Length: 190
Image (cartoon, rainbow, N blue to C red; front, side):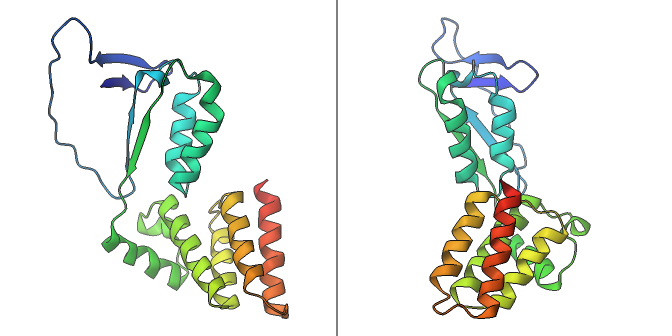
């Protein structure tokens, strides 16, 4: 186990395997929806960009994409074996609030909702709309993302474009407009 304090320079405060006996501390800390817990081994200690890249991974809409980017950008800097676990709490009951705000087209920030969960919910709903050929619903969600400055990752937008093109068959004007809008969003995300 390794405990680090995130500061301008990471500091190891406890480590297992030292000569001194380990003093185990138990704390109960509330873990609210949208919050994340980061656990890392000492292999991450010497990675100079650990803090910034880890926070970026935690804040990304897709936690899997964020962690992949963290590993890809930090792989050359690992001191030895490096293990990192990031847990993010997403409550199903709270998702109803997110879906309701999106359906009404209201500003999520006025409801104290987390942007990364709004983004993930938008992606899920947009994907569902595209799969079902609900082009209007897909455009509504993309416009919501643009209106409230929700940045969707390039990889997620490409995945949506793949779904859209797979479900167009003969390109009708509505499906063509969706594909064009996705291509524009991909260019801006680059």
